[in-house]
Image 1 (cartoon, chains in turn yellow, cyan):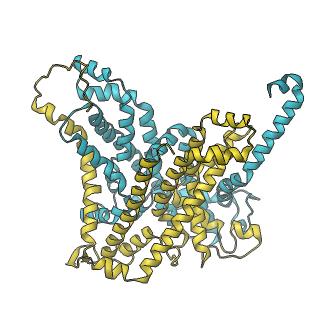
Image 2 (tube, helix red, strand yellow):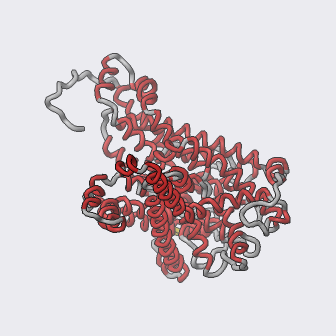
Image 3 (cartoon, chains in turn orange, brown):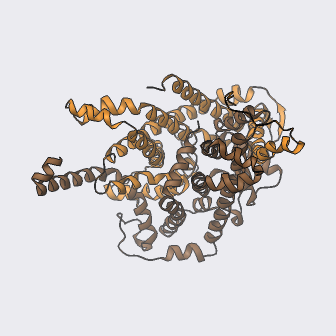
Length: 299
Length: 286
């Protein structure tokens, strides 16, 4: 802790044994849960990824890095899944950011109905991905769904190449709320004097937007992209429910692939190895975030 | 603006009104994108079966069969799913309030060996996505025979780094003298936590509570892995089990979605400020 020599220190009284262990008692419940459900499974995942397991996930034969090199990196569908995941993450991160940016700019000024709009834009944060996926299954219905009825078409939105965009659209819809909330907060933190001085210089809306707003809120936008990326990496229910457990290679996203390995193919070892890959990908994003934050605190 | 107001009052007002309407109209496209899926889901849950595939947004006729079915038909145990989800979400919320308050208290007000390392250990948990450990966690609880129970849905989520962090930030705003004075007055740490720190951090606890309840209510993957009996099924898994083979099941499915969304949206509406504060704290992980 910070030492403050000017402040008179309270008299040191010898601590009783109970007083010495008391702080750890306060921490005990949290640390026990972390130990059992975070540290241990983290270590166990890495351990399992170096073994061949039986159908119940028990390690049977040590194989070192074979699960990675042979059973994942050596398979074309692993790379297809990674490429799809990265493409999906990119589309969702930018799509979410764009909707968040537009909705925050639209509700920046107060006018009749702006409060209502802001509430609606934030609303998707409350809606579960599973519930939304079920609703969109009806909207995308190939013969009698809302989209096909509106356009008078019979498009199979959930099949073929459309599947990727259908799942991405639902994910962007789900993410739009958190994007709106953060970017709105960012916009409100831009000092009003900056805009006032531009008004004096006669700058128009777009000039202010590109020369004041965007540069000032760029840390918020960057942070929001990171949140979007991390959330998109973890997408699962959309994939499982919208594709009815049969995604094609464009929607075989990493968390779905983990689940499929473990619970449909009974290959816990590749599920574990894939989990490690997921962890490493998110770790890279986190490291990028930290290094940028250190460098660009003042934009 | 102020000059125009005094000189040509009505003109300025009309101009403002026009600008207001114009501003609102710009919102319509995205408002529709967000609202239409929800309105449409509600409509489908209410229309007659023969209208399910023909409905364009608003229903022609209204019937409540799907809702009656969801709650009374023995093959869909919706009341049970709702009760399960409610028990699980409330328990997780209360447990997190307790464990996170205690841990945050120790990190802010107590001095002990290893404090820095333990705090780093808590922060480090934020770097591991839950999906990366979910398989190993499943194996752990399956090994204990915990699958198909309510406690398997509660115990792993009884604490969170986000909650500890949120309450720690809150406790750090307390004046130092508060703790020192109460220690001198002979107030034990437990009493300080219960009678001073907790009441003073009610807004932060509200934010944590709203966020955790909603997150647990909306959880899908963990309950899917650990429960496969109707008795312990939660709402999100429950609705995802419904089939979309025909119009009748489609209507029921949409009714299920509405039933599940209503509590989520109620939290959003009635605890909006707390929820958004919780969300903002929850997203500050990476």
